[in-house]
Amino acid sequence: MTHEDAITGLLALAAAGTSEAPPPTSAAREATIDHVAACSDCWQVLAALVGETGAPPGGAPDFGCAPVQDVLYLLVDQTPYALARQHPDAARHLGWCHACRTRFAEIVAVEREAARLPRWVEVGDRVREAVGRLVVRLGRTAAGLVEIPDAFVLGPALAPVPVRGSAPARDAIVAQSARCEIGSSDVWAEIGIAPEDDARAGLSIRLTSATAAPFVVHLRETRPEGDVLIGRYTLRGTEPLLVRGLWAGSFIVELHDPRDARSHRVRLDIGPGA
Image (cartoon, rainbow, N blue to C red; front, side, top):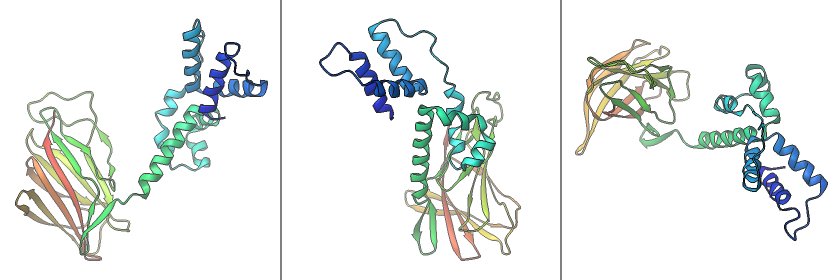
């Protein structure tokens, strides 16, 4: 029975004896009750219906949905065996809770649809660009990444880094790094942000594994009259490259892969924050 069927059944039960429509069968009534007993969403509909026609039902059950819904995104790529072993409480809950199972199915559908979308687009001969952009916000309280391209994954969530002359931020969490795979290989590039003050930031770039030949990195600023090369660097091994004093503006980071002579571009926006 779906949520729609259950709500239709609840409405039929509520209208029994007050309309010309035939009352629901005993099988339909039992199926509706069984569904509502294991569905927090439909229970809320029942509570609303009873509240409109009489006293709301007392002792509403605690379905325990909140902690499970907080971790549903972690379960998307899990096999049933891994889910049961690594998240046993959530697995047991999903086994009977219709509401959370529906939400989980929706999240899985969205993630699968997103996975089918291109994360890189070809923008020139042997040049591809990440879909989306890195967005950095600078402020007197903290600085960090607030948006990343689709092909990137965030680094560890860190407490905001206070800039000189400011009080530490206690509540917000910002990411300080993100990484992406370069081509179809096991080499990943990590881009980090290091706040310097409330108007400038430092940029760090490194490879997570060494390659036989060094990468060449071009840093360009996007201006109305066109892109302007402002720096050319060499990335050797896993040693990080540090670029200091970047100002508010729009930039393009280009990594030139010597293995296949391809370039990988990432757009970077730096702007004021809190």
